[in-house]
Amino acid sequence: MEGKPEILFSKTVIEGRVRELAGRISGEYAGKNLLIVGVLKGAFVFMADLVRGLDIPCRVDFVRLASYGAGSTSSGKVRITKDLETDIAGRHVLVVEDIVDTGLTLAWLVETLRQRQPASLRVCVFLDKSQRRQVPFTADYVGFTIPDAFVVGYGLDFNEDFRFLPDVCVLREIA
Ligand code: 5GP
Image 1 (cartoon, protein in one colour):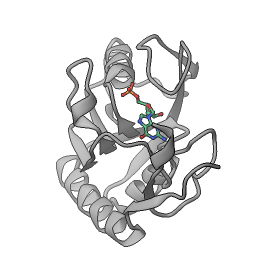
Image 2 (spheres, rainbow, N blue to C red):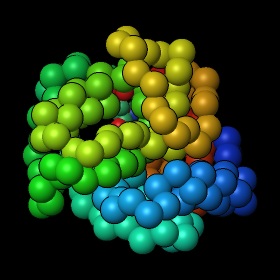
Image 3 (tube, protein in one colour):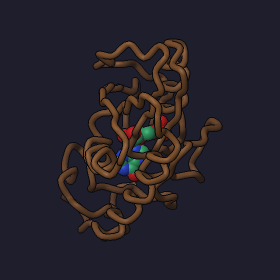
Image 4 (cartoon, rainbow, N blue to C red):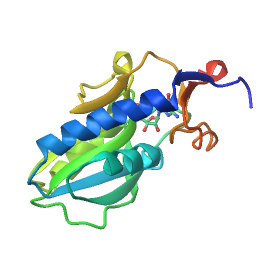
């Protein structure tokens, strides 16, 4: 594997920020029937920490998406390869995703889920590469805004490696 990952956010820094986000979400969804929808695979670590930081009840479900086209950049043509098992009509849905880059994937997912008529639909992303947007997309909750670099760890991969790393690291050599 080329390049040694360099730490961008340590485990300790991540823990603090996830606790803050969980506190905000708990306050804003108190008394509501919250369904957290994780986007596989990248969001699995963030989502696991986030739900354990909540002090309100929630249910969880998952979607898995695939992007048509080659390479690591998003084409905007997205399809669902594993759909929700929950009917979200009338539910308060919070989508949890690892990272928003061009915005194409989440813009598509939000539009797709909105057609199923949830009571509310918000998005929580762990990382936001806000400079890279190709379509307007603003997440309701953001862990960290980051510059244009390729990051791995804390659930994020490069060719399925590095998801297990407890820190978020930058891979320098593959941009
Ligand atoms: P978007 O449609 O916003 O361009 O792409 C979002 C998806 O691209 C993310 O869910 C993730 O799979 C992938 N992605 C974008 N930037 C990175 C990155 O820096 N590291 C990793 N591991 N995946 C990324």
